[in-house]
Amino acid sequence: GENVEQHPSTLSVQEGDSAVIKCTYSDSASNYFPWYKQELGKRPQLIIDIRSNVGEKKDQRIAVTLNKTAKHFSLHITETQPEDSAVYFCAAMDTGRRALTFGSGTRLQVQP
Amino acid sequence: GAGVSQSPSNKVTEKGKDVELRCDPISGHTALYWYRQSLGQGLEFLIYFQGNSAPDKSGLPSDRFSAERTGGSVSTLTIQRTQQEDSAVYLCASSTRLASNEQFFGPGTRLTVL
Image (cartoon, rainbow over the protein chains, first blue to last red):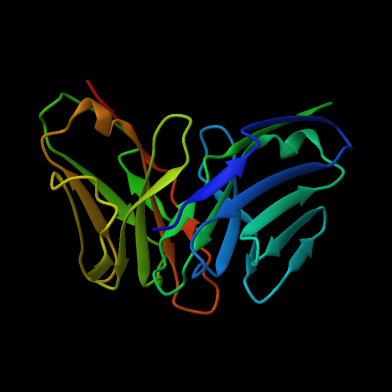
């Protein structure tokens, strides 16, 4: 089955700096890669996703890149703000199967 | 509009008891998923429903776990003879069958087995 590795487990940056979180996956059949943000005690919320026919996607301060050959994808947050502080999860899905396999999460702390 | 809802929000039970957790998906969402999140961990897939059928129940950790969905809407996850290692937050998500695969999550049920 699919295995998703995520790093770093914790990341502390100064407000205004960029943050990068990286994930690797094992199943070449995976073709959908979402990123979820989870604030303390809250439900996970989708912030951006990418499909395997696209190499990069951007939404304001957030971007995701995908390298299918190397089986890795990354989340980039620019101009970080304190409200970006949360746990971020990457995930991978074979849309034929539909179950998401999640990484173990990255706790991002943005210092004001 | 209304999002995914789950009940109860918290459940404390004694080891060996059975528990039922409920999920109400977003109206019109045909796909429903159950995940488990242990403290400080990522989300672990349990089971997926399309309509009332479960094409993928590969994530259920043991035969003490079962789930059903009726009327293509509400789903119940049942854990029999609960063990302390069952303690976790159980999250439900739903999605449509459209091109978007986005799964919308509920607030979860925090289960504590004493």
